[in-house]
Amino acid sequence: MKKKLLLFLVLLISPVLVFAAPKADLWPLWQANDPASSVQIDHSAWQRFLSQYLVTNHPSGINRVRYSDVTREDKKSLQDYLDRMQTTEVSRLNPLEQKAFWINLYNAQTVKLILDHYPVDSIRDIDISPGWFSNGPWDAKLLTVEGEQLSLNDIEHRILRPIWQDNRIHYGVNCASIGCPNLQPQPFTAANLDELLEKGAEDYINHRRGLRNANGEITVSSIYDWFQADFGGTEEGVREHLLKYAGPSRAELLKNDRRRFSYAYDWSLNE
Image 1: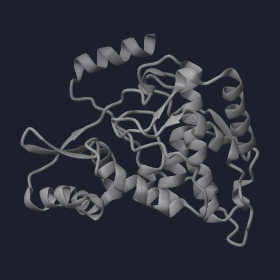
Image 2: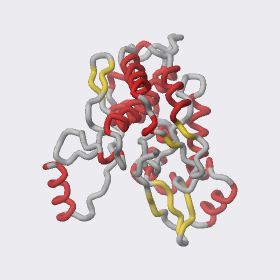
Image 3: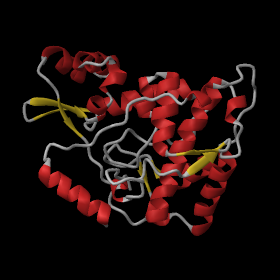
Image 4: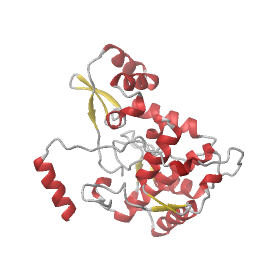
């Protein structure tokens, strides 16, 4: 309560304060890997959860989670999966298996986080991060892998982004929000990583929350503003990235309208 009151006062004093995305900041420990490893992590429990509770044919074109329908038994099964994942010796996996591991861990923990605080209108309302000026749950140390405590921000910004330097990571990790790229209906694996990340990018950019023409201007997701550094570091770099995946009508718009983008993002819960 005190944190929210202080944040409110800061907003009154500084109305230009906005959501600030963390920069990629390598945690060198997690670069260790075994290229020769053939170990494959079992994600079948996560698959069962997704098959049971992820709605992939919603009229909005956005994959939704039926949080309110999750049974006590399935919530426990999800926690059991997370517990098993945390016993994994990640440093002994090959890099592709590691990449899939971290994306699945992030997504499963995010869903469990919502379930633990449900009902909630937005993940941003789960204000459990430490520090006066922190907001939301992303800096809370919720996981322990190889003896190291980890937050969701650690996974995304200190492991996935800096180690793999693949801007498609943003289409893999899911923040339980309407504005986010879809939570995929199957776990990531070393075998399907490229396919799922490509699909995530194409689906998102060709949906109105990724790119749309509204009120005479091109509006794109705030992801491309917050993480512009991952998309070439300039708005032109973002444009080139969008063109790579845009369908014909969106590609024509991007080529012919060179005005600066406007940005938008919907933090409403993806239920």
